[in-house]
Length: 135
Image (cartoon, rainbow, N blue to C red; front, side):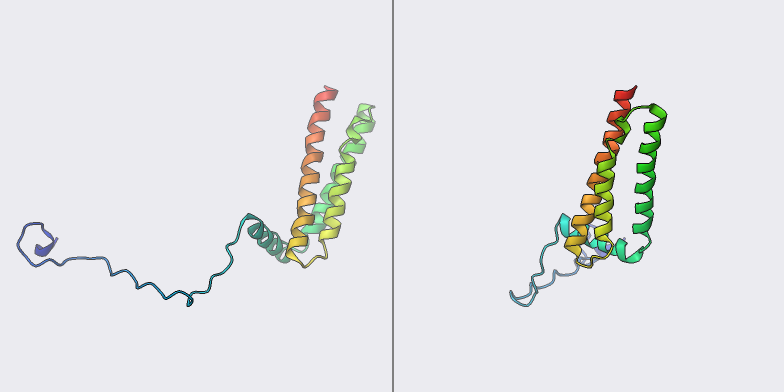
């Protein structure tokens, strides 16, 4: 502590002070950019992942094939057609992934990836529902 930072010391006011706030800029000099929302952020993230990992499309397509194959094997092991219920959703997810592989426009890429994600999630949800029915 310095002598001028002690209250009531009679010394001249000094010490550590915050810098003066910057003067406001005149209106019109600051470019007003668009405010990005959740969709724009999602589009940027999906586009960057698609650019950075071009092999991801093949891996996800292989995983969908494994999921579909597991459903077909479950039909044979359970002797019931109920495990085939999620297969159409996995086919729709594969279609969305197939369409997303060559898209360069961020908005269209987001839409196809959203279709892939939603169809896959609904397929897994149906697997859980069928699992409860078969118990």
